[in-house]
Length: 103
Image (cartoon, rainbow, N blue to C red):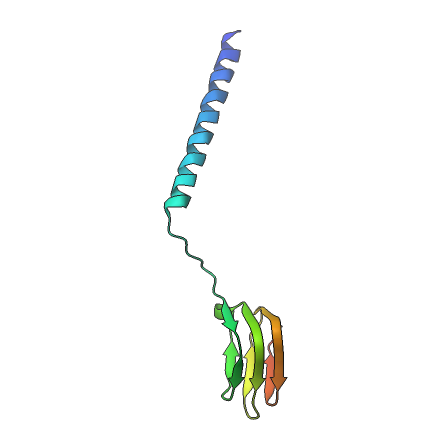
């Protein structure tokens, strides 16, 4: 084995060790950090909206698992990009539903 091949072998071994060390460090940091989520989620089991309300990206996704009633005189406004998932129940609109769109 010539000098170049020895150097290349040594370099690849060092790179492999460096990669393994980096991965281990990242795993330790990941496991040691507290589990927090930067996203929110709003669960609605059943709700009557009598005063106008706005569903925003900050509370998205909205998980609906019951009846959502918008009373006469009230408006439910859903901002662009908000995700609403209806697992059970549904919407009963006697007032207004305003789904804002982009553009």
